[in-house]
Length: 480
Image (cartoon, rainbow, N blue to C red):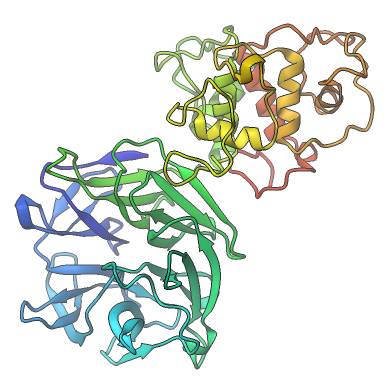
């Protein structure tokens, strides 16, 4: 994530991609704040004089917003990007985002409307308002103790919105806006690990969420599978709204705090680009010569953002690959699965020498669940220990789901009874072993960084190596 801020930007919220290609946001102008505005794709921030609670691009292609008249009433306003009002209509009070459904109407949440509970509102571009309630009474649109609910346009004409079960549970439900009776189509989609602040449909067809008071974002598939990712960002301590920009990146608003001397701002999160798998740009590393045998792997890893450098401009190809480096690299390579709210995991790794706040802790929680790394004496992980060739093959094999090999590896120094033998058989079949010999692996020799990344690159290029992979596709695969 790249973070953009201005001293006067304390509490940005309600992001939406405007008709001008900029991402528009609301913000309080109190306490010296800059008020609403927009952020350009390059990160430049401009403030405007619009009293908006939430923005959306209407079915007519204009910028619309929900705002207040200052007399306690609310208005749905059509404007241009200079702030000139083109039309406005009475509206209900808004809690959360303003969304345009596939039915061409605006959807938002109001605090009351369904027997005193938070409810969804459908408002036409001509101002006709309908309150939509859940017939079962079970899908309350988020916790009424909080001041907002999250909802967004989803696939196949749906609106997806966060719900609250009346206790501690948090989840997501959907409604079909194209049905003659949308209320009758409300259904529960999935439980969430914690309270979501915002939701949006991503460029990959999944729904993406921000989680309250965390550095986490969530991915929710159309079938209801939830995956959580942790961002490497000290700024994103209070994530709010989320939107998709022109290039397909995610934009996330983060509240700041003047009392804690923490700036507010907006982060741009790279989703990974397909060109990284086909034509990645050369990595700007001074110790990777042009034409190096591992150069394609370096360019690919750097483009996806998981290549770990030394001093920022060196790859150190002949240095040994360490256990801590490898577990973090592989976790990032498969899109950082299994991050958890807070610092504790429901499935902690159990290694005695790795604390919950260590930089590779989430990666190790994930790897331990797959039994990728052996536990060393004293229950230790030993992050600085260099990888051995047999061990490296075992790590990749366990990550891929321990798929069977069709034949023995043929290395004379790998006994069939060795604990790493099944992994080496599989790795040899797919060209993933680290050796220059056709008959010997030298399993106790260490693996260099260039050798490890080249093997990972070959693994990402071979669909037959992933036959036992139980998770979804990842951005680094070089095959469809």
